[in-house]
Length: 252
Image 1 (cartoon, rainbow, N blue to C red):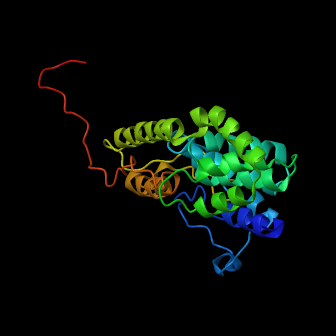
Image 2 (image 1 turned 180 degrees about the horizontal axis):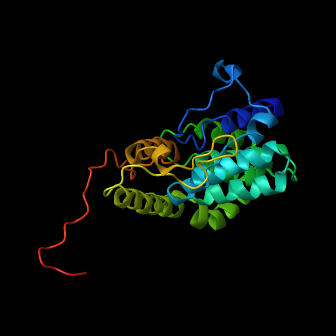
Image 3 (image 1 turned 30 degrees about the horizontal axis):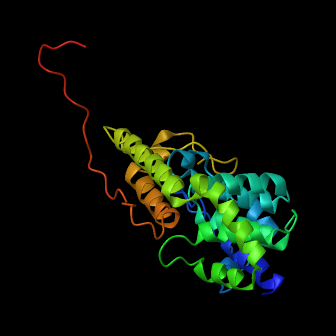
């Protein structure tokens, strides 16, 4: 198992769409990013647009985006903190990235046991795309490293395992979608904090995307965050709800 292989896979993992929020105009994708085997540069990662409003719905995806952004800025300590926060909100890509960083000694001491523990968490869902890397590393690990990984997992599972992290993330998602449903009462457009940037400002609320468009985008991202977890149900289309009419002769 070569360091080059793992370095490439972490870069490809970081190239996954993160915080792909609907804008008034869709940003142009660099031509090179559409080609097979594209590996993002540090500059690409540092240019990520992480929408703070996503934290209300999918904090795992939001902090994963910040982890990639700060990694591209060479702020590795902050990057690890963001990836770890994302991991606590059930981001399996974040758990995988943390495993690769620990294995490679990427701006931290090499720690194969920690890498194995993170990979065990990243691959815990059925048919996980991270299962093969976990099995590969487990195969070449020593008995001492496996035991150390098991000891780490006892402490990590209550925070980062699906039984806790994914259920908590699902609750956050559901509450956020309820908020969007309320926003849809008599007002079918919404702007989330961080959608605007210096070069793409949204000042007029009329330029904000429709609520349903935001819901669709969030659901698409949620499918990635909850990939393979059987408990996740997407919200789908919202039904327009008018504000309740005041009763005749009634008062506030």
